[in-house]
Image (spheres, rainbow, N blue to C red):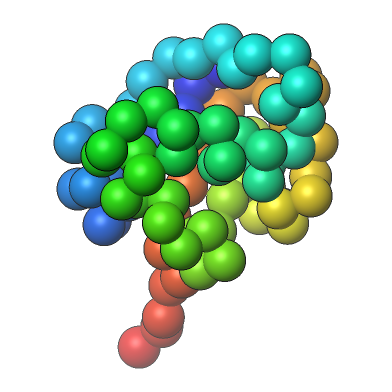
Length: 83
């Protein structure tokens, strides 16, 4: 699946996107964030406060408990404000 990173998530990780194959047992967005946080210092920094990070699966906003099975694209981004 393709992961996309936006705003300060992208800046902390140091890349805009990547293709990954999560291990067995990574079934939800929350599981994926936990697994990513273990991949290295930059990921740990990006996902240190997972409660504020928003996610979208195939361009639809989802909650952390959303299943990732079958997802083609998952995006991570900080909260957005309008103006």
